[in-house]
Image (cartoon, helix red, strand yellow):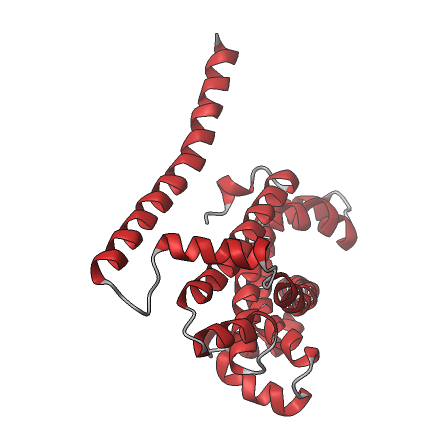
Length: 265
């Protein structure tokens, strides 16, 4: 009986986790369709027109795949760089006071300052190649990964560290057995937030820096007043972000199943 009840609970939780977002999406799509039909707008397409445009871009003409691949090159490289630097810097700042005293003012500055104004500076320094787009994606993402990583290490119970020291644990042992496992939920949450910011940086870079990939497609459809294809491209980017974040959540559940109960969304 207990096993059956637990299985039923899991099924209900799974249904609720999927059913609620799908229900909200269905309601939003219906309202979008009705609002645009009643307004007879020439600029905003209906939901059905947007879905037809998405189907055309993905399967009929395949016009979306090339720009999406081009944009994702900068996304992948910039995000990997942000994870490498952000996690390393966050771990170092959490344990090395001298490093924190040096980096902390710049971390606060990056948190407070909008990233978009840095794009012209990046363009002047690196030109219009992929290097500048990778750096912009990095700048959008790494600071959130750094802050979450540092917070995760700092939130580990100091009593555990003192007890490990009293039993003769080395610094490497403290990192391996206490700090890293304790900080994993916050680190993974930072990676998830950073991934969302990286997608944002990918699109902003191409709209404000150089018209390549998805950004070029958006500007092309806007200039031709192809509103259905324009909204379909935006929807495709949003769907990619949703899929990437869902995969990150799956990875988070596999690596740290206790993370969802420790760190909120």
